[in-house]
Amino acid sequence: MTVRLVLADDQPLVRSGLRVLIADHPDLEVVGEAATGAEAVQLVRDVDPDVVVMDIRMPGMDGIEATRRITAGPTTARVLVLTTFDEDDHVYDALRAGASGFVVKDMALDDILTAIRVVAAGDALIAPGVTRRLIADFVGRPTTAPERSPRPVEGLTDREREVLTLVGRGRSNTEIAEDLFITVATAKSHVSRLFTKLGARDRVQLVITAYEIGLVKPPH
Image 1 (cartoon, rainbow, N blue to C red):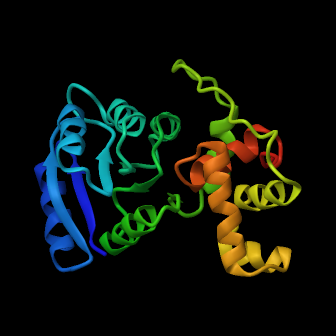
Image 2 (image 1 turned 90 degrees about the vertical axis):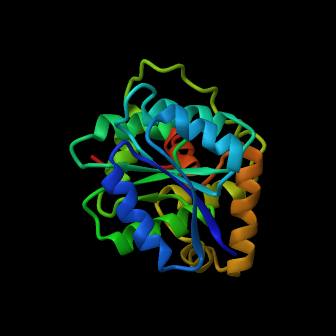
């Protein structure tokens, strides 16, 4: 299956570099480009891509507001944010807005392609080495944006809470299966039910929920 992409970045060279790289990979296809957040939002409405590769800093509507509008809409498009390590504050806001993950602009281009595929498959991806710190800090941070309502967790079974805890610790489906002595298919089924019950778009939101309700404690 081909992953359909929208590239949103105000720097033409960045979009061009990604587009040239993507052209060599038949499982990826660029179906639109945007130079502003507003253009990105409109493009998603017009072409309904699978993934939006979103820069944070853009003129007019920035990538965070564009992400918020895209994820609040009827589309199933997932947003992969492009950032730099000195923009943590923006990353927190992007996660709150519904981004499925972020990558760093100076990562190897092949790693960015891998990130696109991971996000398209429904998993969350955060740049290696900062996941737990970033999510833990994110959960505890105040925000000027309106807080979303807490996800309803009362209806979770004991097994689903176990699975949510392991997702919060960054465990993959295969690792969850090994930890709980179940099949990978069963682990995937539990994670899918968590998506439905918690109204989560992807694993990053499950991780955040696990921290918010105390199943996983922030590192000290």
